[in-house]
Image 1: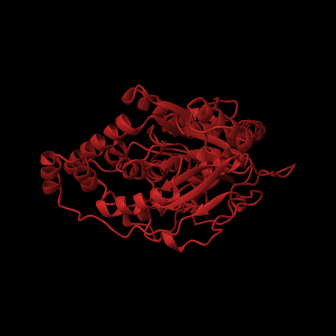
Image 2 (image 1 turned 90 degrees about the horizontal axis):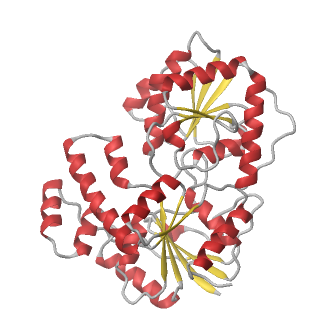
Image 3 (image 1 turned 30 degrees about the vertical axis):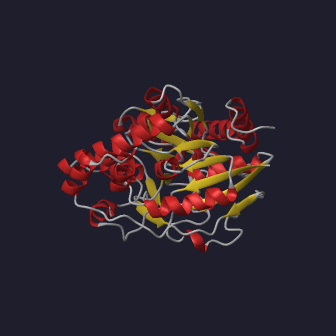
Length: 411
């Protein structure tokens, strides 16, 4: 048996604020399918030691050969004001010092904690979920195994998208230097959920072997027949704590919903958002027909087949997750082209609707409202395509072949 140390920047067993499992859970489901692997999970969160032995329950899926390491990473480096951070960053000769200035969890204490785990466990593979686990693993001594980097986002891009103050440009540049150098030196094996970002990684590190893995959830069974309720239901899924969701919701409430009034009878359900959100979004939420659902434990209760599932995020960043949830439930995906860039297999007017403008998305909603048969056709095609291409067992075989090809694991 080969040992895999799965390091995550948060609990991989967590569900986001809308009720959907994280991309990290998707990877655990894949690794769980592979034979001859013992998986040990280590979380960098402060409450990482509070999990039970069986913290993850997904209906229809049994987890095997997975253990949670009851380890705490309590130490955090002092956070300096930006001018002092820049000064120390420029004049420091040590990579660890520069890393810790941007990511406080990357410090001597936490490296020692991880090193003890490595010495005791002696893993063959480290699976680093996101950039902080990769950076932490990069400072280990005498680790002779392979490190797999699971890429989620280019953090410098998200910082500039969410804010555009002068200090953000400086901080974004520091993120850029750290993440780019980490990929150049330690990004030999990379998996990700967006092929466009993997292509960018291969430009940063020409020796990198990458693997595209779509976001996977256990496939659900839909009822044989589903009514089309009136008024039209428009769904947005995701907590505003994530940059893509926050920008997308603002686009939806400012550039799409107002243009539907007097055109379509509808209700817009915002899953993962509640009325107690910050002041900026709270003002936008005060519109007719906009309903905040907050956290939903059972998504099947709100994600109904043939509803409109809208992706109004207009930036091509990060691993994509929401499209998979929508299509798994047989919903009609209307997406801004940028929001699904890097997802392989989506076809306009076949299994989804793809538009390059908010005006086009508005027109698509109006047309689909007039044509229920078209909604049913696209929703059924979406579910069929999802179920054919997002099987956990099939993608586990693809992952296994990639691991074998790169001599990371053996039969």
